[in-house]
Length: 396
Image (cartoon, rainbow, N blue to C red):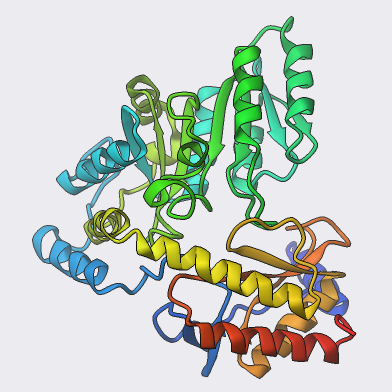
């Protein structure tokens, strides 16, 4: 290590992670993202991806991408506000708006950009944000970028959110109440009806990040708002094209004025080159499949119930999960990473997650089943998890 370098402190920090057993090396995916994938030269059952519906390698998405490249080329060549808005981008936005039953939609380059860019664009330092303590990092960063005053409420405690909003009523500025739909580390679902009522009672904007709900909850995967039957009561809906949709990107849905405003003020939209046409075309094909093949979501939930039942029978602690995101709680980050490494050697890829992604003492293996997993693969996964957990003393 060069101690004279002004960046030497980074090396020291990395070394401390290695000593603590929390440093992670990126696994190299050498195949398509499938139920059994090839990572680092090894075929393993893949319980680490967000490919909920198995669409990432679906032939219709692949063919749509190839056709779009032949028709429109490999890239758009510009940001959306200059020369990068292509016919296929607008077609995708109209399709998503119709699917979500809203007036309009704008697509961002990622779900992270959609969250952070939206919150930062619509609020000022005079405004207030009321945010669930376990909201995604993209929401947290957007809140900070907005410079609005941030008020955090206990996880899923809608009454606490309402009390904060009540206390803020006399203060100047707009109020935004924001939550994940499905929480990415615990797999539980937000109490959206109670949060919507709290926002309505106190004149707050209601915003939801439906990244892990898109394609998973609601009719044909329309998300948390549809799951609870709350259409027209959530002012801002964020979704992703990178998980169940199987491709890349994020989107924001709402009123025409909201979308027009974001097209003028959301910095990630203004200063990032638009998606390649192949991405937009694959996303359009994915929405076709969502509407034409509802059995995919049914298989996802059937696999989820089967897998959770097997984990419960084996004695694992899966926390508060209500969705295909199923954590296996182990406590300490070092143990979680050891667990993950040992699982990989036995033929199962599932990631260890610790602080700062989750609170200290709440490290876990995060598993996600998909619609494409077979029962045999799930049985083998449960067997490997149980075997390694007993070896490490996680199960007795």
